[in-house]
Amino acid sequence: MNTNKNNRIPQKPLINIRLSDKKDAVIILDQRLLPNTIKYLELRTIDEMYDAIYTLKVRGAPAIGVFAAYAFYICCQHIEVEDKKYKSDECNQIAEKLKSARPTAVNLAWAVDRMLAAHKSGKDLLCECQAIHNEDIAMCKAISEHGLTLLKDGDCVITHCNAGALATSQYGTGLGALILGAERGMKLRAYVDETRPLLQGARITALELMNAGVDTTLICDNMVSAVMQQKTLRQISAAFVGCDRVAANGDVANKIGTSGLAVLAKHYGVPFYVFCPASTFDKSCKTGADIVIEERNATEITELYFKERIAPKDIKCFNPSFDVTPAELITAIVTEKGIFAPNEV
Ligand code: MRU
View (cartoon, rainbow, N blue to C red):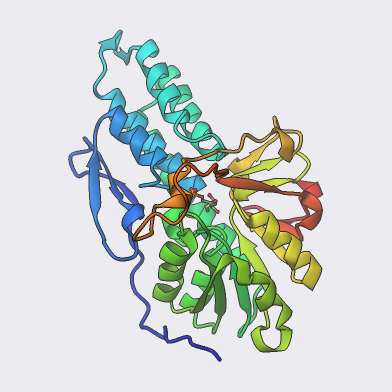
């Protein structure tokens, strides 16, 4: 039985990150509260910026890069100027603190290092953070256009976590083709898994795809095999996911559960596509084994999002936030430059 009731009129996408009108704060949508509450926060201090990344108020690999660039610009406004430049030691401290908030997504360190380099070479920091944001908007649009060549009217995509506009800048990476296709009048369907433990799929992807006019069905993470198995009923055409870091051999780190989805996709003959900007490639990681995987607080598994704690007190927990999908399970990687086999990257 298809219980989809979400044929709603497409809505305008929510803005996730912007500078305040006075350019003295970064304003973010608090993504922890979605989909029930739309609340914007104004952040000024380095501790607020660090906390926003660490607690996933702002999240998604490209988005935390864009946010960190703005955060660097705002935090620099509070430090002393020496020879017409912010003091380098203090700039470095801000950069290190921002980069330490989350380890896996390469975009965070990439954007902060770019801001540091801009400072060193005397570039205007406001222009630089706005350029990073504008480039991300253009990259997402280009990724979405390339992704759209993989889809035809009536297709059904399965996705994991959230790689939409809220994780990036407009359209998104993994969701961009679906959103762009729906905008152009294509009839597209999507299966969205919840993405335990922080439910980015249920809370954010489901909202973004419904708002875009994609026929969206929510499933629990452990239902993927059943959905792919029911070939004639569900007709999954492809799996589309975002990613946080691509190693030199084409292994890809993304939200915990992605590698399981890829294994199932291979088993059931579903093509598995990864979407990301080229800035997500990290040649310093030879293989996925070199990628640092963030481990998060056990309370995310045992109590967050539940009315009551669901596990025995003092239970030992393992809460990795990402996993590595081996290159051999990936059909292709889609970037702003085109569609590539993982061993071509
Ligand atoms: O922990 P999150 O919510 O930041 O994880 C997000 C993901 O894993 C996304 O799939 C990835 O960052 C790509 S976002 C376009």
